[in-house]
Length: 110
Image (cartoon, rainbow, N blue to C red; front, side, top):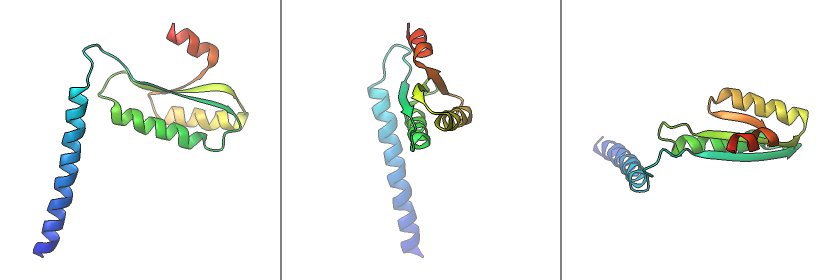
């Protein structure tokens, strides 16, 4: 029983150390300005892995985000109807994800 307890203790200690290192590095490399993270995923044509791309981007933004106005932008570069429906569904699942055309994106960054 002691071996099992020791294994659980070691696993949780490693998880705690990883969380501490993450928080410490974010603290060290933080910016004094209120910057936001914007992850842009341009998708065109029939993209078989559009869902994977957007969910990965959302996971990365969640990992980096510190409660600011961070977002994932799915940039419509001429995608087909099925891919667009998938992207709209993913964007509705995540409140910080948006589906934008090129024109809307250029207007947003001005």
